Image 1: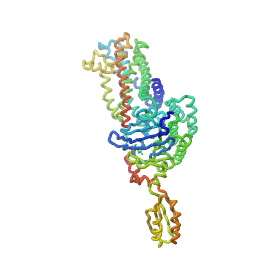
Image 2 (image 1 turned 180 degrees about the horizontal axis):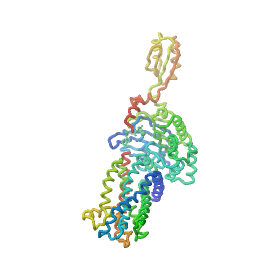
Image 3 (image 1 turned 45 degrees about the horizontal axis):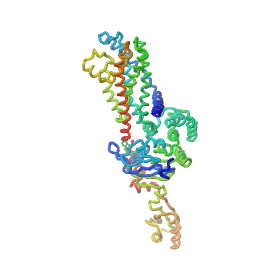
Image 4 (image 1 turned 90 degrees about the vertical axis):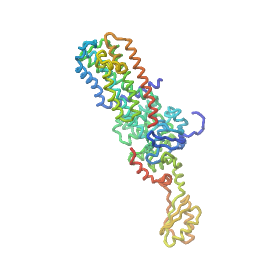
Length: 331
Length: 258
Ligand SMILES: Nc1ncnc2c1ncn2[C@@H]1O[C@H](COP(=O)(O)OP(=O)(O)OP(=O)(O)O)[C@@H](O)[C@H]1O
Ligand SMILES: [Mg+2]
């Protein structure tokens, strides 16, 4: 451990650009940081540049310009040092489908130059942890998709990396396997404080796993923060008040609109809708004011904006639309 | 340096495991040299009756040539294995491991060297069954196999580089079909130099396959020409080293397009 900067980020990408030979601009000034121990999610539709970012940070591809550092090391200046400290699991980086589970883990450890005794212990630990102990001596060719994925992650972890890169860790898994994988990833960051950088198409996945999320669109980060911050940035929650009597609707609109911190009040028959910075906090005041004005309320609800709303706001497209549009041209 | 060797060792084992896992390919690899020997041995049996071969039995002349030609014909397809590694994503995984890039390339060569040694054994054995004699003995055989491995290293490296840069099977197939036959026939593999048209003999002087064939034949003969063996050997070492360097450099090109 060197005592240079007390808290340099585990991963740092600054103004990364990359244009592929045939002129596709994959990254267009992408910048973000991941703190030590944090789980960071890159969220975006097909072709946004997520995998390209992972490839650059894991020393595979070269950026045209910009700086990429992992555990404080520049990926172009000292790639071997970076490689020693990271684990990668990606659909673009696979182990050959030859051999048996235990053999693959041992081989992965050998290439990491682990000591034989230590390696043996580590392999059985990983097999247990990823529920592969029973299948350890089976040929990996006979593994299910979920088992294969777990083995891939276990292989990426043999050498106890400081940073784990997961490109679409749950794509193609059934819901049960996906939930199991989420628990595994959450456990890694909880138990050993591992820094995790993951990419995903799933809003729910980012919401569940990531301490912080960055939305990537066309090679740039268009929004960044915790899931809650991103949602709050939308300028508030939706408040939906259902009145007992539709004739009081216009009166109710006036009452609600006069309250501080409430915007975009609209009326539709018996319903009054509005936005507020803090929906849950605004409701009691609204109810009290309506009661003072003698307006009866039948029901009230507060809705948090979804990440989908955040996505729409920042990219101008619904997440599902973007995914659909891109999936046509994706290999 | 020791790390390069260690990495090469583990990666070669890995390549061999992949290789052994394709039984069909394995069988073809083992049968092919026998077919060469049988076909050409019969086809050209009577050419030794022409003056200029210096041997009575055409097989004595043919075995070393077929052995190095076989090394060329199998290593020239190395790029296909490279392409498969790239397509499967296994190359990307290797490239993110803290192992030497040279070792990644040499491992593919190690695989070819092992295959070459096994195939050489088969060819020499088949030849002996067919009546060929090897007056150069064990030393001659070792030199012959070494020449095949050096040639294979050079060719496999270039093929790997081509696979990595081209990224398409068609390119490799095209280039190989274009090169394989002319390279073989513009050499002394089947025909003694003295019997060739002058221009072919001249071209053959620059043909690495011919260097290997001459080196191996001489080493296996009753009276090896050590000067010739040394110069051809040195030439092969130089092109093998250059080709390996070229292939390691192409990782950079790959880095730009991956
Ligand atoms: N090797 C390559 N050669 C040429 N273009 C590429 C290559 N890899 C990616 N691209 C292009 O770069 C852009 C970004 O691709 P990237 O794979 O980083 O997107 P992504 O966010 O990971 O998408 P997905 O969600 O589909 O995995 C896309 O337009 C893609 O077509
Ligand atoms: Mg991707």
